Amino acid sequence: MIEIPEESRKQLREARLSFLGYYSAATREEVELMDNLVLGYAAYAATVTFERDGKPQELLRHVEKISFEVDQLFTHFREAVRKSAAYRMSGEQEKIRAMLFGSRGGLDR
Image (cartoon, one colour):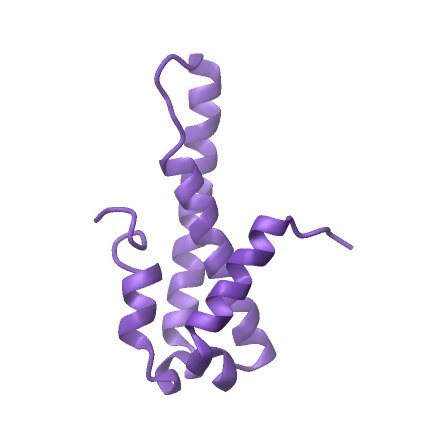
């Protein structure tokens, strides 16, 4: 079994409190979609805000590759959540969009 870091558990708890309508309407699969979106958002934020100044080029290429891959996963889960019945029934579309969608969540604001 994979150990989930405490910071990730905290982010999931916060999401479940913030999106009660979504989580209460969600199937098990939809819960997993939102959890993955939340964790994907956190991973994307970490790659976007990574301090690049003065870092070796090899490390920067690696970070950029990871950032691209995380972006692809984030986009996949964002679209899956957007298409889910729980999202449509939650009444929280605006709140979810504001916190997690945008062009890349709230990172571009």
